[in-house]
Image (cartoon, rainbow, N blue to C red):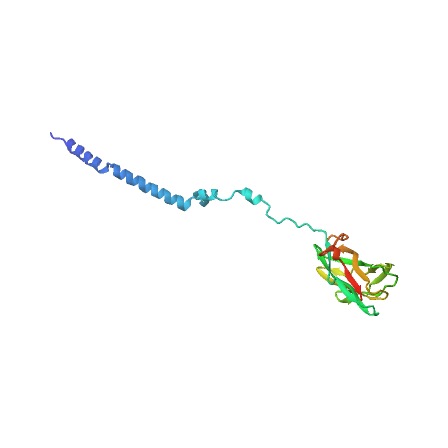
Length: 224
């Protein structure tokens, strides 16, 4: 009696041939899986992890701790400069009011208020050689001026600090009448001291100097 066993074996061999994977098929599957994995990483992985190389190139956190704020400015003590306008002048003694000296005050580093001027006169002066002094600040006579003759050659003029406020530049003129003088005589008028207080530091101004040649400080009045 014939059996069907050889036929079943033949069918199994055919089935095995159909399900057998060749190397090329396996390679294609691996490539497809790899591409899908890369796409999944690009879509779902955290951005900072995916671009980790870019994050490492950023400056470290220690840079933020550097203090980049500007350093506070140190307030310098005020300095006062005297710039004489006219240093030589020929005059005739005729009892008229003339300009004895004129100068410009210059403030540096801070605004300052002035409370007094000390003028000195050189040139063999006698008492009452100069009379009727008048101080003009920025072209105006101060209502609070107090004129005190310390000696025949020294004149102290006290003013209100509220009236004389030096911010940058301030013209000052001292007028008077030459009452007694001889032809050929020279009278030199100059400022020997100024009392001032700085507005920023509220301290007395001690740095006072003459702009230009100190030997020519003041105004020389040549009597004709």
